[in-house]
Image (cartoon, rainbow, N blue to C red; front, top):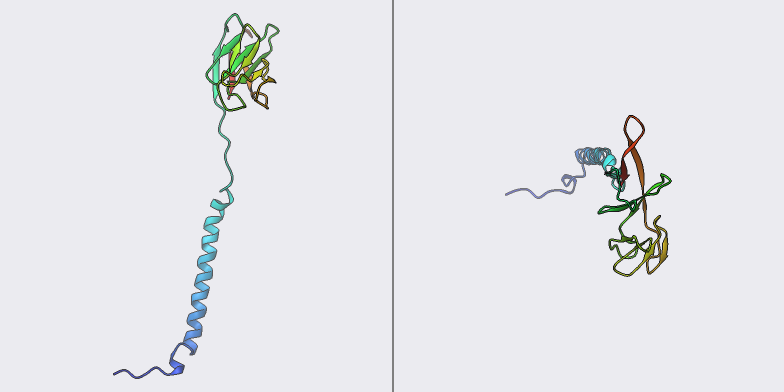
Length: 152
């Protein structure tokens, strides 16, 4: 049979104090190591890297109307050389808009929101203008425009 433990044998001696100190020191060291490891991850947890722009090349010549219709945008090339690309996604509920050549405006087929060729809201339930995209000209060696590049 084993002898009953006395009060002084229940972890109150000098070895117990050293053991407690060592355990706490190791716990603190582990917490510091975890913090150093996780800091770079947590620092950027809310950070989002913006996506690279998607480039769409539209070859010249454009249709006689000066309007090129793409899946994501309408490209307007004016006779004065000004070029503009407007989103085809309506700001109301996200329907795909189209250019009405005879009426000279952009219209949403879902709820008839209307916009000018530069994307400015004219009428309808949409409350915001259509977003526009940057357009650059691609030229040959003689300076003649060979294509328009739309930055989506």
